[in-house]
Length: 128
Image (cartoon, rainbow, N blue to C red):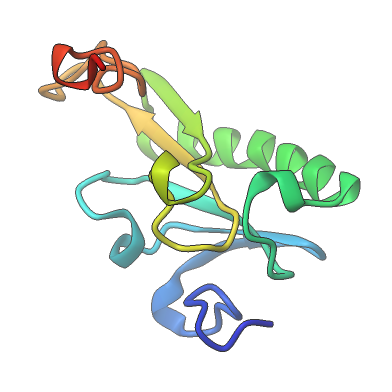
């Protein structure tokens, strides 16, 4: 446990934990997701800074839970697509130094529908 980590542990009712498994959990708390409506994160319960620090079992449980989350999101929100991703380290966009997989349902009516997670990385403003 890391006392400075907002994910260690998640226990506030506002954390809106949808699935809680032995090693990982899924939350749709919007205080961490901002404008990404209906999105959530799969988090290991043990403090691991990035996906590269997860144990083999944590990785397996993360991807098993991802399948459950998809079934749940499909029934709850009927998304037309998904973005799934990890940000690693500050230069990679990680703001909370506790590994977490973003699960982002996508909809055709969004202003950026059809744009993937790399759209900003491929833009002219990121050409170095």
